[in-house]
Amino acid sequence: LQWLRNPGPQHEKRTLFGDMVCFLFITPLATISGWLCLRGAVDHLHFSSRLEAVGLIALTVALFTIYLFWTLVSFRYHCRLYNEWRRTNQRVILLIPKSANVPSNQQSLLGLQPLKRNSKETIV
Image 1 (cartoon, rainbow, N blue to C red):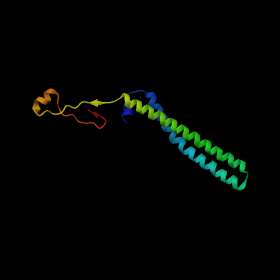
Image 2: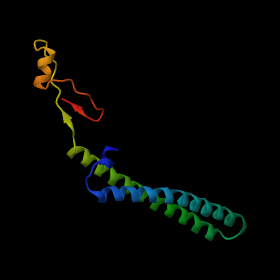
Image 3: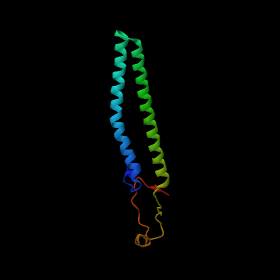
Image 4: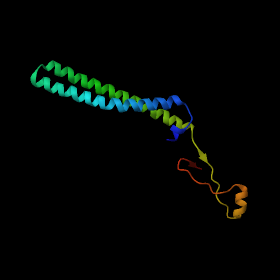
């Protein structure tokens, strides 16, 4: 979520949003189309020509191959963008340990106040 809130390149966020919308629409359509093609192939095997059944099975295989290829390429692209973003946008906070010799009122003057930790931060 931090990547989505980052004011970085909007093109990457639009691409992710567009791919998510396409995935939500294409998945049910591919599933229904594949089921209908296979159902038609079964009907053609029982009542009519085997050549049409083989054609419908080939159509189903082509449909799912294209769908899986698009899904894998899209997923790989977005994973690569995310890993590149993680590599170039790291937040590091340096925590200075509380010294036993310095009184607490001097620690606040020196800026040695305990810092609230955020789960997204790297502690060094």
